[in-house]
Every structure is written in structure tokens, then in C-alpha cells.
Length: 315
Image (cartoon, rainbow, N blue to C red; front, side, top):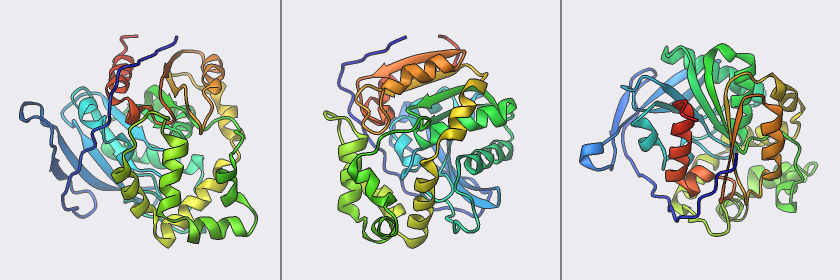
């Protein structure tokens, strides 16, 4: 099934402040939503597979848990425009994956930055919240993790959302190939990849040609990335992401109802893969948006409508 929207839907990022408490303690954040529709956000630290994960939570009074998993070089911030709306219907749980955002960034010698390791951490996270089973939606890298979780721990997943997941091998442009060059690639990525290059990657590759680019949000992502431990972690993930064979092998094993959502102008993962993926998963709904690689940031209202409809079982 094809889904197309043309109305303008600019992003409107939220900027919140607040202190963080010790592990396991909830910290509330009041949102800038209208007073009659205010959504309370909370943060907590959860230890999963021995790694401290920073988790944002909203809509805790809602009965249906929804876990959102971010993509490469990102954090929970990429879902900032949709969290409040989703939290009016779901108990939204949004972790920063190990190595990203405000989560712990252990050395690659102590933590395997693989899709399998991430999926086990998410399984621990769901158990820590005591929600039983959850709807799970992942974007890009997060999509591969969500798919892996749904096959390794199907008992934890009720419905699955895959937003341009990194499943099939892709042809990289020269910018993306540079960090993978022997010897010099690691130096470029871990020492010379500055704010300007980071911004350019998101502007040229992630967002569609006509999209509003949330520069301040990208700068916040860069600030989280710009430390030796974060760069080392991200580089380990980058190398691991090049081999997607294990993810491809799991695709036919997905048994949960699945939403496959893609941007027609995706320059990171070609939209031609959307139909291929939808054909290989038995119970699938396919939606195409007129966006780039990040539909939830480029068309947040349409994204919320489609995701809510699917996870509530209306279509």
C-alpha cells in the first residue's frame, strides 16, 4: 500500500532542561505543549547488559508501551517532534543506545557494538520497565535492531515498525566511504570529522531536498558525538554495519504485524528496498512518504497519524 502526503509539516523541536538523578530514579520534565495538552517527560538511567542507558519516557499513564530506537549518530533527539503526540496514546520509551547520546560509551574492547548486542540491551530495557510486551519501532540502525529483537525475542514484541532499516547492502557515496578506508579512515572519523562535516552529512544525506533542517538539533547530536569515547564507539558501529547478512537472514523469520515506512527521496537507504522488504515479511503494511531518510523529522504529523493507526491495529 502506498501513502503519499504533500502538505507542509515543518518540524518544531522542543528544548527542555532538567537535572538527572541517580540510576533508576525518574526525573520529570514539563513540556512546552499547550497547557491543556501538556505531556510530562521523564528520564532515567537503566543498566542493560552491563551498560548504563539514558532513557526518555513519556505517557507513562498510557496502557500500550511503544519503544522507539534511533539511527546511527543520533539519539532520542531524532524523535523529539513526535514523542509528545505519541505519548497521548502510548507509553513512549526512547533510549539512547549504548555508545550514543547520553548513554555510557564503553570501549569496543569491552562491548560488542553489534545489532545483536543492541537488541539484547533493548530486551533488558523492556524487562526493566516491567511492561511485558511492547510495540517497537526503529529507524535505520534502530530498524535493524528492532527487526533482530522481533526474531530473537518475539515474545517481547506485539507489533513492529521499520523506518528505512539498514537491512540490505547499499552502495556508499564517496563521503560515506572515506571513514572506511584502511588506516586513514579511522583517523578521519575519530579525529578530523568536525562539526561542519557532521552537519553536511545530515543536510546532504539524511534530510530531503525540501526539508526543514533542524541545525540546532544536529549540533546537539554533534556535541554528544564529539568525545574520544563517543567517536570510538560510533566507529565500531560503523564498521559492524557494513555486514548486514545476519539481518537479511532474519527478515523471513519476522512473525509480528509490521509497518514498513520509507521516504521516497531517501539517499541513505534507497526506497527501492521498501517493496523488497515488504514482500519478504508476511504480514506487512507499506507506507511511502515524500521525504528523505528521516520521515518522523520531516513530516512529524503524518508520521504520528500513520504510526498511531498501525500500532492501535486500525489498519
